[in-house]
Image 1 (cartoon, rainbow, N blue to C red):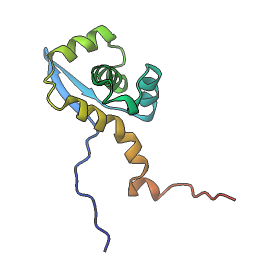
Image 2 (cartoon, rainbow, N blue to C red):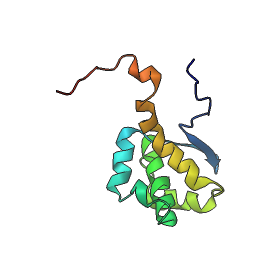
Image 3 (tube, rainbow, N blue to C red):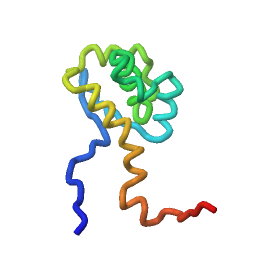
Length: 114
């Protein structure tokens, strides 16, 4: 019998600031945008402050792309930073993990290598 992973996967981070609701998330496209800003996953723990800032800024693209970086940074200054880096990494990884979900593989195009 195959054992299923029951760990809850996160796909969004939500918070309210000054009466406005924010939803942070990553899609494949916003991952590419974030990498275009210089984010490198392999450097996360070597440069944690840079990584937090880049991930935080990138996580706004999906739902709040019109916010300036200054506005995003101002919110970062006010947010509870406890476990924020790990949570942002989980958000960033969510689109990658979804590629391997059983649900996605049902309708996947099958391919071979010759």
